[in-house]
Image (cartoon, protein in one colour):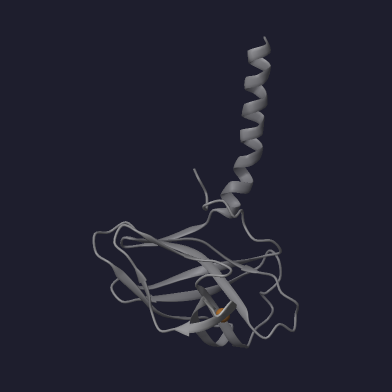
Length: 162
Ligand SMILES: [Cu+2]
């Protein structure tokens, strides 16, 4: 009986976790590449720039390279990285980001990110909305993802462990 109750509790907990999990874990795939959970932090309405984050994984045996990004909501979209220099943290533009064979690249706060500048359409930049960003890969071609805008960063745990 005790076991039974415990099992029910576990099942209930699992059932409660599932829907939220499905909502959060959106993923896009093309060729050997998958782009997991593109998201952006909700910012004050007058924020000059917006950043987008995701994880690119490459299941193939050949490396690929991200060569650029763009979005209809921004006049300019760049690839950025964070660097530590002389005890200072700053971000700078990079032209490309390598996606190693069988590996993954994490775009996250304080790491690689997509930076959207010259914002033209701010209507999608609030919690619960989404906006498209197209990633240009050297070998795989273009992949368009929907970036979810959220008030809080998704779990910092190494993405979704399921
Ligand atoms: Cu940046």
